[in-house]
Amino acid sequence: MSDALTYLVKARPDAMGHYFAFLKDAGRHLDPKTRALISVITKVHAQTERGFRQYLGRALRDGCTPVEILDALLMAFPALGLAKIVWAVDIILALDLPEFQPGAMGAPGAWHDLMAADELEVGATRRLDCDGRGLFVHRAADEWRVYDSRCPHQTTNIPQLALEGHTLTCPKHHWAFDIRSGACTAIGDRPLKQWPSKVEDGRLLAHW
Image 1 (spheres, rainbow, N blue to C red):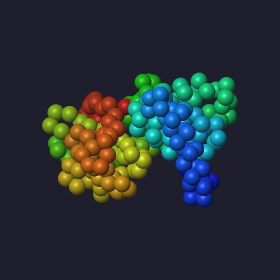
Image 2: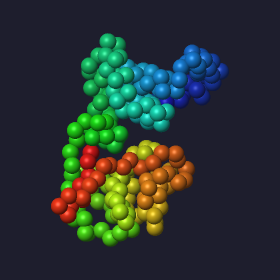
Image 3: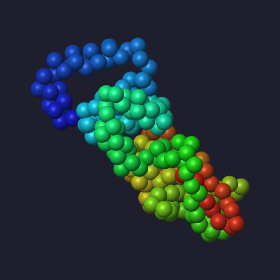
Image 4: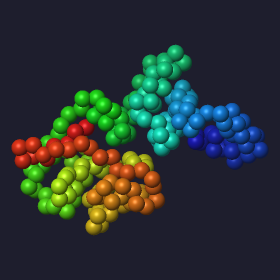
């Protein structure tokens, strides 16, 4: 919410209450994903960066895929124009969200060399940086798991010190994850982003 809207809610709670009730009633026949996409478009139209960041995250939480969000922006081209769409995509790129990486959206992407496969013992986890991306690498008995180091809640970059045993806890809002599976075990409801991985010629590779 912008500073102006926050002010109006405090200064004229009766009037703003009616306004928000109207917005809620006007969208009651729409599913959450559609409402979220419309909200994203309106924030792009107004070029409200904080609002766009907020509703982009809400759209992802409501089940919108990155492709659906980009398609919604492109479909709104007649109203938004290219400059505002580019403005929105620049913000998405600055956020560096894992979901919007080409490899995560089905585009070709690339394989990245992380480490020698014998550098990590079975059951161990290591945080590393590769080609500008923070990662947690966990080696199980019969597989490797490579996770994006950012919390799926608000993309906080989680440090190595946040790992205790097999539990990785985001320092910002305390979402907790089991590093062996990536599953969220406390506070939140979304898993860590996992990147495809493979061992080739004794090297661990990950794809994004």
